[in-house]
Length: 229
Image 1: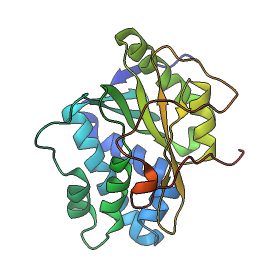
Image 2: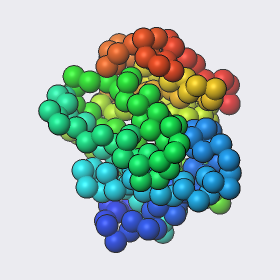
Image 3: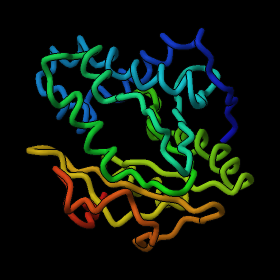
Image 4: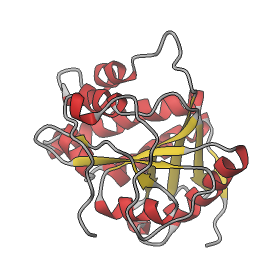
């Protein structure tokens, strides 16, 4: 699919925030973090803006030129920095101070995030609702994964729906040995891609060891496979 992709800059911030807000407003995880829709509409963009600001400062935002899709990539070093910015707490403080889930989502995803090997973290990829299903996400991810292959870097993400799981599997990602179970909410599926990996129709599990077993973390629980699409 022929699309023009460029790297977003600070001047694109509001445009990308609007895109992500629209793309994830009814996502299962966003709906869990902000159960009341009217409240979600008020604070959701602010919440995602914290993600975006972090990536604009420390990572890379790829976007389709017309603003219909964007992907947020964050480089993760093999060794954690001695002093880490407490992003989950900052997200809650800025977006929704009285909402424990605004911080908990970051704690739960961080608990199973792989450590010990440098990789690229696909924090978010959003497509405008009126353009979903047209292959824009695949077109946007392709060059980024080719870049990972050239640099010999694995890639990691958390899928939040069965549909996205199957898309990522086609692009070479495989399920890790941990699942993220949100309390009284949906499940998320961490996925890992070795450089050069090709898609497979079969479910595979990586042998890369995450930071800790999900079974020993709040909200965790063993291997979780998504439902059929």
